[in-house]
Image 1 (cartoon, rainbow, N blue to C red):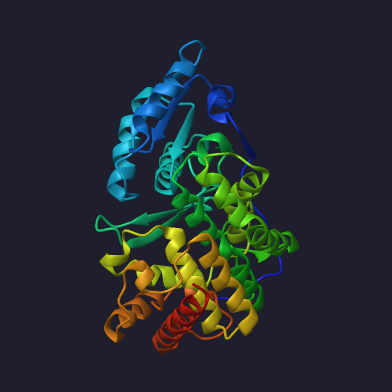
Image 2: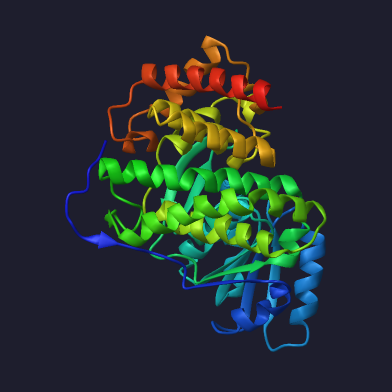
Amino acid sequence: MAHVERTTRGFGSPGKYIQGPGEMDRLEEYTSIYGPNVVALIDGFLYDSISERVNKNYSSTASKILTLKFNGEVTVKEIERVKNAAAPGNPDVFVGIGGGKTLDTAKAVAGELGIPVIIAPTSASTDAPTSALSVVYTEEGVQSHLIFYKKNPDIVLMDSEIIAKAPVRLLVSGMGDALSTYFEARSNAESDSPNYIGKGYRRCKAALAIAKICYDVLLEDGLEAKLAAERGICSEALENIIEANTLLSGLGFENSGVAAGHGINEGFTALPEAHGYYHGEKVAVGTICMLVLENRPKEEIETVIKFCLSVGLPVTLRDLGIEPTPEKVKIIAQKAAEPGATIHSEPFKITEELVYNAVMAADALANYYKQKWQ
């Protein structure tokens, strides 16, 4: 557990956050601020439709755009491939369009090229877009390391019309990621751990306040937003959840830090059977484990599990395709409790045994409530 070594406070955020329907069609207005030469990395699943759309919008302007297709995983090899494809055009700005892994790769490439980056998510599936970091994985899909950047994205551009029509599971996954924000911010405040701004500072009061309102918005608007997304409509509740999943959760985690919710998710990444589940789905289960690990009040744990069930988030290990055997949970605990892992920002000493017991106990509790309430 690392405490801050000074009393200096730090807060970071993207240069601009813009959210609304039809914003993708205004992309050239935002890239032209930096210059006419643009390279965009686009999610492989959306490449054909989005590439055609942006090329059409750029065709009648003074700007030129080169679109590249993302290969699907944030690896050192993929970052290098995209950088080598983008560099010859001497881009003035780099754009990432797609899901969290596409966006993390875009940030990495822009960072290596030393140019501005615009992040344009096509779903509200994670809180990665606003942050000045990328999560890098191995070729096998296991979380490897983090890359930290000098600054946050220059612009985060959220086209809520596109997001409303994205698969609903992605929106729900984003709620799972956002669900951890307040609880992990609280744990970091209790342990006085450094945040992710620069080399780490104490938290500003704004960070915990943002994290708390993120949680409040989830409870208030989560179910209604999911129902709106199932109809492909952009209601006010959905706009609120897009903001909570992206801006509020992003600012909350980066300016406070993560803890056992994401730490136990790192443990899940060590099991191949969990690789087919989204980041936020695993973080939701990790958050329940975290609350049990911290022995939080029963009412709080019940509220979290009930919320997850209401919007369709997983709550048990089996919901993630993991059999709750001692052997499997031991692998999770070993990975989560590795030296230097994010779980060590908890306000007490973490051991493999503690994590093992918490995951087993949380799984039993979640199974109990799942049978009781469903």
